[in-house]
Image (tube, rainbow, N blue to C red):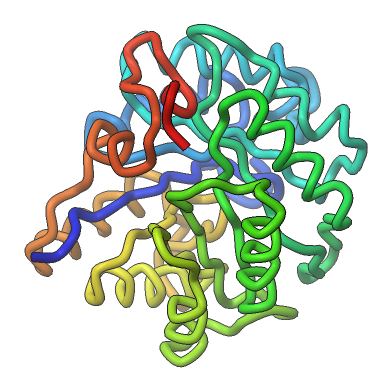
Length: 291
């Protein structure tokens, strides 16, 4: 029997702006509203990026994350929440790790961990070995589970190195992101190689950058993996780029594909059990007395 389908929802990201698409949620209230709609439709987890309340630019500030997480937890107390620790806009450890310090009802379950530096079209994401290991160590100490982001097979190899250093504990959750210009391309062979290289006790989702999102999501649904989907990675509904998507548009399409493939959506509760996370509803992060 195939696993239920993980839907890893990425509503905002760092790059999309209102000038690119009016549908991207930027303000605290917009992000909360999109997550609420996604929760009602059916998702497994959410990957949050916060934006400055005045400028709309990316921010690392934990008080902004707290405003978002606190409201989401009111209507979705079991939803698995991951906060971004990205290095594209900030590269001081104190900044990138600040959101991990939220506690209690506001504590994130997971934090993103990109496993190497890489180039995007117009900007670099700098992730030095020291930064990666420090972020992994802080998450381990705080009981927050890394969401491992790999853009090529070499990054998966680095995850294995972190496992040897006992900075990562099983089970592992990987987002495999394909189609970036400087990394693994969005085709079945690249995806298959990366999946084959994953360490034991790994759970994975496929993401496609831009036009490749639907293809990679479709492959993942067909072969038993999870999907990462949202405006963070792709603002268009069509490959011809003549129709802008909303997050709801992208999620509804995933639901149609999942139904066609006879795959039910994995609940947050099921994902929590698989990942040894606390049960939600007031208890968040890695479960006590688990790896």
